[in-house]
Image (cartoon, rainbow, N blue to C red; front, side, top):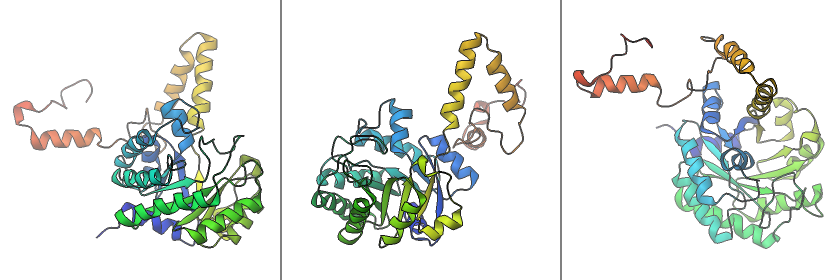
Length: 316
């Protein structure tokens, strides 16, 4: 029997080697990760706020909105999906329901942070934290819901103790160790550390699996071998920046020239790669079900007189 998605994700977090996990926000991003051969995909809470909701990452999207979005992503691929669940969307009681909803949606794991509502995006000013006791209760409520429904579902406890008001590496590590010792969390996640040496220290001092998302100020990402030696359980790969920056650049070029020539030139260059590995067109190469799947089903289920003529058309 093949392992469940949650069991496969758990194995990645428990592996002795750092797992690179593509980090995005749309079904197509997850499908890209799967087609490229990655074993799992993480849905970014911040980028989901921006790309899907068109709003700031301040907890504006509700739990039901986020779960519905992530359910669509999970259904689009066969690899496990790991999701940002903000603060659990309220009290410890809400955190229980949050886990239940994500499990029912087919998600393999989530991370829950120790921020005080209203939450802020990682790396933003104004972050405040709940008390130790409230954070522990929030995480344990989530873990109890996990154990009741799917013991393989991954619960990651995130701390923003580094970037919160009065925060420091020492406070982040204190909280990380506390959550590792006093809750049933499967992994500890440190947000926003500013050097790779700090990443090494945090992971080294944390019992059990842990990882850090380093600020861009930390500089280039070390090799997977070096990340493994640092104790990074996973390393996110935010690969979708070109999907914003380059699209915006092309749109500005269109506006500034007042002509369609920039779009035509870009599209022609893209379609020149038809048949090559890096060809994706407008993205329909990733979709499930594919056009070929639909054609096969029509031939299997429709009477002959209802089947479409796929041969004698200009689009054959």
